[in-house]
Length: 382
Ligand SMILES: [Zn+2]
Image (tube, rainbow, N blue to C red; front, side, top):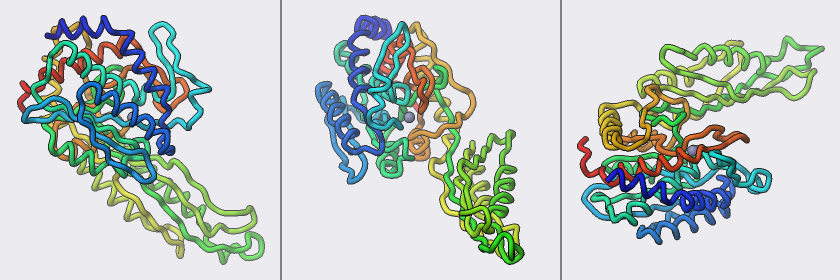
């Protein structure tokens, strides 16, 4: 079966690349509902042409989410694809879809339009080879992953909970599958001091900036290379003018943790920060956004099964072996206890950066891999 899939994918490289081009050309900035809705309309039509039954989940401000269900069977394999990108509308004019040798470029191509294309092409290839999976396959397309999936996380968790396994088509890490991801916390720290004239009565002021400086150093001390915990103060600002003791300051904090236990400990530490300067006060809001995706036994079993399933194919299938720092919707899916393989998408580099690209030969390889996994998934036992 793997031979047939592999050969078919290689015969149809042009068609796969054409679909990728169409998807990249439909810009889909998270902040533009109109653009994401155009892409979701196009993708739902592609799904329907492949036999998918689609269901839309309309959204007021952000793009509409939708699911498309293929095949039949008792169990369901869930595939996660986010449609949105970080690139504002018009970026495509500056950096159009281009192919040069083995490299394809375009806004959002690596994160994660290549993953969407891999999912759709795997299904098309299976259809054309008449290798119908014996399980249901449901693709969930969401519109707000780059914003933290606040509005789609409940749908993701609900669908993941009902599924037998979940495949997340986010990009790979240098070609490797992601079996663990750090969890992500997002916090906002507001410091209240007391304003005073910097020349005539500085002793009556309480500098919010100095207080914030103390807090930044404290937060920075939470970084721990042993546990893999990272704390980043991504933005800090305070005060208004040079000659006033500043009354207000604020900071945005990014937290990454490997385990759920560590998430609790750090959440506690951040929320119980105390002011250092006499009468200043702190207000801390926010919390964990994506829980860590821990490398559980179930995930290891799924990974080993998958590796074994594609072993006679001329493809590479390896895992990172460490929790990657970036969060994804795989984190939400894994939090329901369903085994997740993440990073089954493209190979390349430059997510959220101007040099974003994918490797075309690996794009085809990943279609073969996913098609084989989907065709065989009924044999996997948790
Ligand atoms: Zn992504």
